[in-house]
View (cartoon, rainbow over the protein chains, first blue to last red):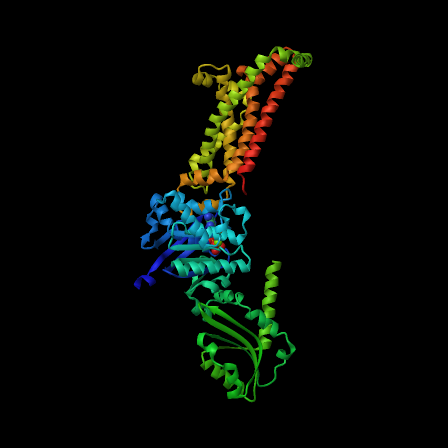
Length: 371
Length: 232
Ligand SMILES: Nc1ncnc2c1ncn2[C@@H]1O[C@H](COP(=O)(O)OP(=O)(O)O)[C@@H](O)[C@H]1O
Ligand SMILES: [Mg+2]
């Protein structure tokens, strides 16, 4: 099974520099990236971070200024013309705006890649188109035109087209960014399904951590052309080190908005001695321990649940619970020490400080908005 | 009985037209001939130039600054020359190509040269409108530049190409009338050398009516075709 973990995409020391009349833009700086076969590798970053430029290097729609690109063991930087085009057929790509041909039917859009040099017979090509449309659930739309389809359906067509040459890799550049949340979920599910059934390796570019959370097993965070943090999903989520990573994780969860709400309540603002606001988070097995019950049984600490949330990351439940704990003396502290021992992450919230912090952030945002 | 009455009717309002019926039939064919032949040659030339302009332009699929720069300037220059002057200026060249500088066949040369740059720009505009993302998607599935030109650019821009071709043909019909004025034949020639010069107004009017009818037919057929191919 060495095959399963060998890198299918390897980017080494990649720089991409755009030279314009008045300035040069370093869109990608010294990026090293390994994507293994079967990965769904998320790359997150704000707009302008260099994500699109970086992935366009993978299929050489963008040539790198420096560094090497190896895909399935082949150095793509050395290829040009016919050989490069041949290599590209093994790397599918989907886009934010679908990029379907408006004047061709759905069937003909999917057929298009097969018209470029495939050795299949006419009949086999049509069979392949039918099979692909079936795979993305659009068999009945074969003779429609893109203008007649919804955004989600168009993206499905684009996926079918990207798969026509049986690629090993699918690059998704903000493919769900123009879609509503429900459709986004369905498209992400489809990508996950393709990953599981076809062994397709997916590189998922997005500015929404939510999408990464939904299907990725690995994630890299990009800022100003550099990858500033990377790792497998659970590790990054449970232990982010960079400020930007934390920010992305926060925006993808409801915890902070829930907390902001909670600290405005009078009862929470007036916590007495022996009372503490905490956020507990836990992944995997610890979810199953009857923790809350034990708090009272063992320590006579009363938990007052304010909010809670469970998410599934890579088939592992990750739960978050906002509580006010009250007990006599240092019962709460003893209880929290025990909880931490059980592998639960404990975050103590000082309500006054937290509110001051929120006010500072709001003021900063306002300033930004008025500049 | 009715035919006699009808011809009486026409003789009374357009006496000279009826008398010169054969001239009209012939000059109508000449106009159609000049339009079709120069339209075909200019169409091919203009299409070629328009495509080359788009693919060699900065950011194009076969970016090539010198080619783009030269073609772009040439098109601009030829588009700026008023047709009536072009007719005169290229007369020696015309004689070289078709052996004479007067007559219907001689008119084909200036008509083609006058029309091709105009059409090239129209083609360029139509192709430039094809979404950059669609081209990129084609490159991503391994399409070659030629495949992108024929299977993406020309295909996606087809409705616009039909519309701009109609515009070009109509302006070409206008040019054939002008070419007629310097001895190229056709309805323009008939209108000027017979109608205008001999004060036979009904001839001028009839020539105009036929030209309008041809324009109308081209317009209607073109619109229908464009609408049928457009699925945006
Ligand atoms: N073809 C180009 N020419 C010049 N600058 C470019 C080009 N493509 C991208 N850039 C610049 O490179 C930076 C990264 O862009 P991009 O890769 O599109 O970011 P992202 O996809 O993360 O939003 C931006 O500053 C952008 O303006
Ligand atoms: Mg982008």
